[in-house]
Amino acid sequence: MTTFRIALLPGDGIGPDVTAEAVRVLRAVEARVGGFRLETQEFSIGAGQYLKSGSRCRRASSSVCPSSTRSYSVPWDCPACDGGWRGDDSAA
Image 1: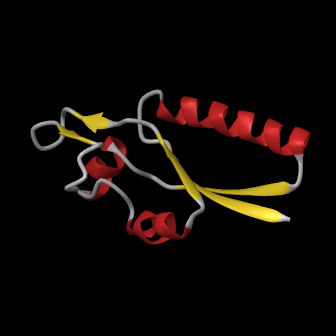
Image 2: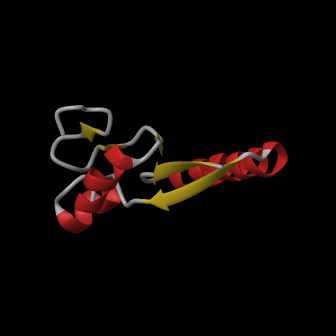
C-alpha cells in the first residue's frame, strides 16, 4: 500500500480552519477510494510562530517538509512583523 506523507502548514487566521477541512476531504477520499494511506504532520508556521520565536517556521518543518510526499500550506502574511513580510516570499 502506498503511503503519502503530508506536511501541514496551516499558518494563522483562517488557515487552521481551511487546513482542517482539506484534511477532512483527504480522509474521506482515503476511506472511499482506498489503496493508499495518508500520514499527516502539522507544523507551526506564520505570524504567530514568528512573534513567539523570531522565526517564520520551526526548524523541524525545514527538515521534514522536503522528506514529505506533499505539503499543504495556505497563503500567510504578517503585516505586524518587520514591515509586513509575506509567507510566499521564497527568500525567507
